[in-house]
Image (cartoon, rainbow, N blue to C red):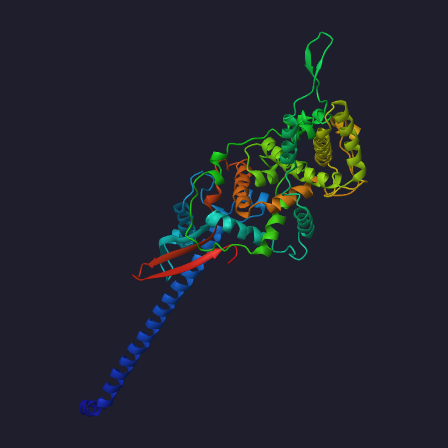
Length: 491
């Protein structure tokens, strides 16, 4: 029995060389497959890192843009990030800190991950977040601000926009109302009168006595020193007393500068949209806004004075200039009214025994009549009534007798046709230099936003609407990813 077992044991088959070859082949194959799997895993990790870096950059930059100034948006419809964030000290470093904060937040582990110590296959962290370029609202003399305004106004139709303003301005300039200085002519005529030596008579006491000329125009001319605003608006309580110190506002201080990402200037068609924006957002005499510091903002954009009174006074002088030119154009060509002035001048010249004085007196009366009618026009305009650019028999108000006591007739009213004060104001605003309007609009925006809570030190040159950022991301596996993006409200 034992011999049989030994014999059977000797008959067990032995391993062939082919079996060893198979083992080596399988080992090599498994190594290759594992290497491929690990390479794919590593490639997937690298791709995931890049993709997440892109996503985090998008989220972080959009989150920064979401921190736009609420007061600026609510009052002026503009989307810009105030880099001061209500502190009064604005810098690009503040924006970088916010960018880094949002990037870090998106790399944080979840609460469960922190508790369990679990980590993702990426192990990412934000190494650096830099703002490498940005545009401030004040860049290129406010070109960035204008671009934002145009984006806000893009739904407005350009065709036919402000056609009435252009028509009225063309009529005003076409008749020379903006270039005819009636007051200079009146002053030259008065200088001729001042040269006249009055006749001398012997009075009852046997002494020489000068005979006064008795020019009826003197009753009007003596009022000129009060100024057109004081004459046209007798009740001073109707005029705003608001005033500012301009030294702290954009047009009167040094401004910060961006790196020039987008400073394109508007073309002529786009400028019409800017004009429309001014009318929509800014106040004026007769249409004051509660939000505004200066109540006559359109007047400020034209003249840039420190108080509402001074700006309105400047507008009154402009209106007087235009209205005197218009009224002179009508009056001096109206034979009936010129005849009345001639009759009065002839009477005076005869009484004074000075026939050579006839023409000078006639024009003195006509100039005074022109002034009195013009002040009446201003009174109507400031009271909310209409006055046509060019007068007619129907719209002329004062008679030659009324002229002598013209202040008694300053009771507002309406001439039944013509332009309102706002229409004259729009003509003047349209004629004002675009650069000056933009600078003063920046002042107005600062004035109004500073009135809101938490914005007492607001500056327009701290406001960003487009920026470029470079975000560098590291991993615990020793490699990093970097993205460079430009984001803005119009991008």
